[in-house]
Image (cartoon, rainbow, N blue to C red; front, side, top):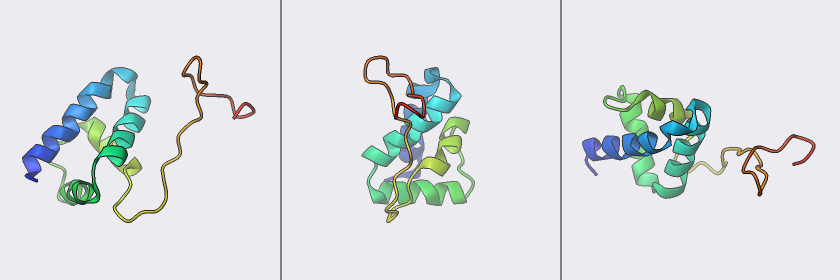
Length: 94
């Protein structure tokens, strides 16, 4: 995959979620990349970040720490949400 295409795709994901508010958008961008980008794409993502991340929006860069590195067995934590409202549950409800 060309770097310019990967940057465009990551920025399109960020553009979709930017209306969620910054903190939620960061989580959603990372979640989308974790779910739908294969390890080769995520490897290219991290290589590009290490070389400066030219072209990535700030939202993509902010989401990067939540993106799983290929080969990582741990999943990022997600807040439990109420099924009816979609809002985060209080700690005692989870």
